[in-house]
Image (cartoon, rainbow, N blue to C red; front, side, top):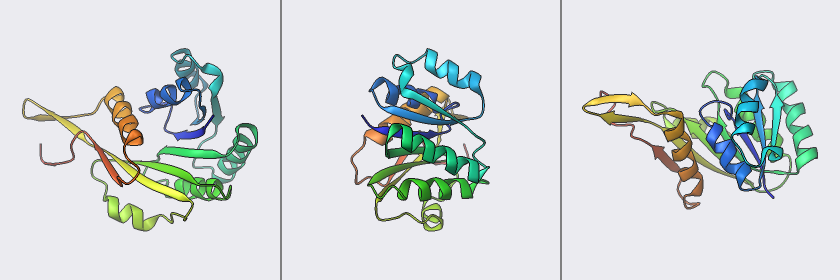
Length: 182
C-alpha cells in the first residue's frame, strides 16, 4: 500500500484523492475545512484510506509537524501531488524537505497554472536526488472560439493521466496553454 500526499485535494483535485484511495492507497490530504473532507470520503469506496491533515499550509511549522505525524502513522510518502498557490512558495519547499528527509525515493507531481513558466519554477525549487520531479500544467479549453477554464473533473482526469504517463515525461499539459489570447 502506497502513502500519497495531496495538496489541494479538497477542491479541484478531490477526484484525484478518491482515485488514489479507491486503489487502496493511503492518502493524506491537506485541508482546512472538515466538510470538504467529508464530501470526498462520502464519494469514495475506501473512506478509511483518507487521512485529513487539518492545517493551513502557510503555517510551515504546523504543516511540517503534521506531515511527520502522517508519516509515522501511514508510512513513508511515496508520491506528492501538489497544487500550491504561487504566493506560498515556502510551503512546497517545506513539503519537499520533510518528504526528502525520509531518505527514500519519491515522486512529486507539481500542478502549475496555465501562465506559469515551467522552467523558471523548476530552477527555483531545489529538487533532491531521491525525488523524481514532474510538472502537470493546467490550461484551458477552447469551445466555439472562446476559451474557458477547465472544470474540476477535467482537471482531476488530466492530473490522473499525467501521473500515469511514462516516468521520463517532465511536463504534462491538461487542456491547452496556447494560444493565450483566446
